[in-house]
Length: 178
Image (cartoon, rainbow, N blue to C red):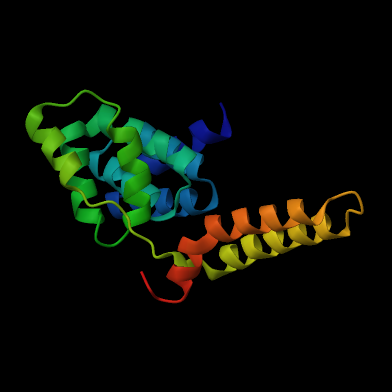
């Protein structure tokens, strides 16, 4: 018997609250294992917990497994309703889940719920570390062009103008103009 099978058998003997705690703990250490445990337990609350944890913590590729499990066991209408509720607290996770959920055929009422969930809008200025990295890369590229003895000055200036044009929206956002 596999270790996962033994763990599932042990979980089935526990009360519902402890099962949910175990699924949460498994999900936090290994999301795919948490989804597998929730799937094996098969209880709607376990499936809902896996979807909620996926929305809160999973990366977009793991989110696929959470959505597939939830749609298969709960139905797309229930998944759409859960995502609608979770969109206020975890907008980025809900966006990832909606990507997968919208791939399923849906009746008009369910499609309306999926389309009603607002997309996550994350201001660019909140991701200043990533932006700083992008700007450093741009600066390195300009310096590399400048250091290249064979690069004509007109090429360096043209590339610099392209970079300025491309990053103008980012700079406006960082300045708070957006």
